[in-house]
Length: 266
Image 1: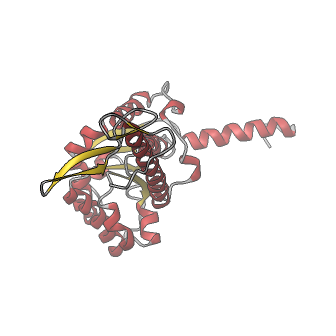
Image 2 (image 1 turned 45 degrees about the vertical axis):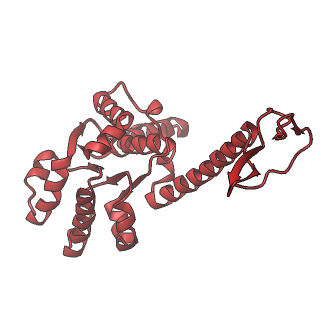
């Protein structure tokens, strides 16, 4: 314990012990050593509170550093780094799917304990990646270690340097399963990271444009052992509808057409 010298306002009471001038608590205590009574410094309530606040500040700094490191590892697009369930579309045909994902985030401690992930599948631009990012940001805001990336980016950036770190993260989110190149090397890397999470007993969320049928019965049997692992541990959640990106682009061109005074026929 650090020494706590008398401060202005501190006083020695009738008991002969130093007291804090603010809270009145003891700053000295008597103990017996080899039959001799000596005074030793102790923390009063003020000092305990100050130490606790210091500890909390240090933990907050470390948490911010850890969150920053996780976001760097995530290779997440800036557009996805701030999305939340509050801004997600809850009225469309994917409302139930979004709600399932929100509940998954809310119940993540149980999901982690049970090693249960999600498989978000459906057509291009239907909101799978957006919703997965909502889960990531929700948990990161609570201090839960999460990394969201894509297998394509991992392979391009060198998966070997990250594999051991990703194997220990509380939740790993892998975007665009099935979009990676179908070389033997790429498939081996994909299997390694899927298998490392499987063996570590930690959950993964996958997004994919593949159908459940394509996952259950892949045309290329080299994918079979990968998809078997995925289907065993991940609850399937389907996303339907027209591509939101295509719809947004179409709307943007319609607005531009009006501004430029054009017509639909060009």
